[in-house]
Image 1 (tube, rainbow, N blue to C red):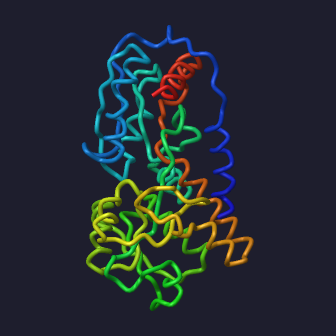
Image 2: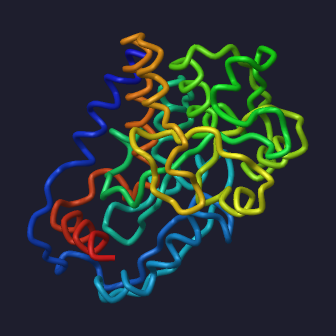
Image 3: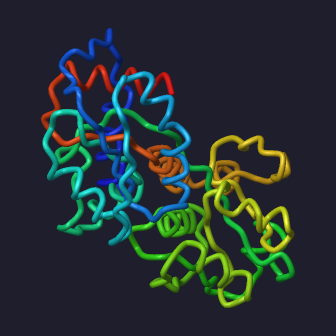
Length: 289
């Protein structure tokens, strides 16, 4: 956990670097591809396509979205690192998942501090823990009285869902075990719905329909303050509130680190060694979309 916090401190410094005046004359006048490391129709894919037209206006260049799914986002990420650093290849990556996988020792995962050039953060992830609506878990406090260990579901150990559950459970001192290897995050939600596992952690935007249909019940917001979403009760507790109630300063710091990590989600990147004028041009264009 200490290594995670050290790496995260360096990473956040990159994310908050100031912008300068944009001059796009150095950007090649040719098509720009944005690599999405997920399939067509995924949350990342839809997000990029929703801003495609505006980005074309800002850059005065044609944009094409390229889907390269596989390896939990690693296939697409590695494709970005191997491209020419001239501004014509960009990517939107799961920063939290890649950073965690790298810290866990995976050798095939690009290092976000060395192997790519970070242009900015598209959005942070709004994770919630959820359980089957008709199941025995009605509130987050029920996690402390439920049979142990609690059973969590995650796609793989490099996914942000795994990180949210593993680090959150450690922060709250909850005995647990994992079922991993699901083909998608959607499959983990179905496992919770069928009662095969107790809890899943999911991006609110991805699981919203199941919450609204009363198929899954949100138990806790993985945040410092509430998300303020209409489908989530303002009284739904946050991880930081619960961690503070545990009165363990170390576990509270772990919870705060998790929130920073999930805040690094959806990063726009380019290949490493991107020239500074092109970087400034792209950063400003992305900031306007």
